[in-house]
Length: 104
Image (cartoon, rainbow, N blue to C red):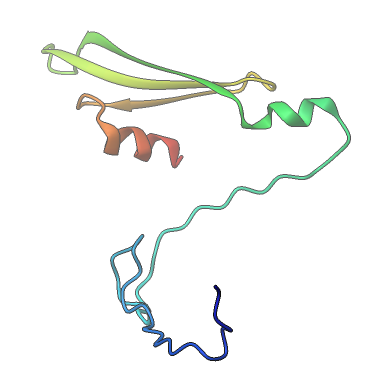
């Protein structure tokens, strides 16, 4: 049997910390945010706007002092426009580096 919600004795405890940012709810600290805007049309090509192919790789080369170094890269090709993007790093890619590469 379900009781009437008006007769329940419920104490509401407001959140004090945002679970996603781990900051106080009333914090005014600056945060980095990213937005993605999409214009809706009736064109079929619009459905492919979220698709991309991503590859990681590495390349051995010589630096300006003639030392052998290894360069790591992240390459992305958008499915519909075929636009290409490459991000280079001196360190191997980890989750944090891959997320940083997506920010550009």
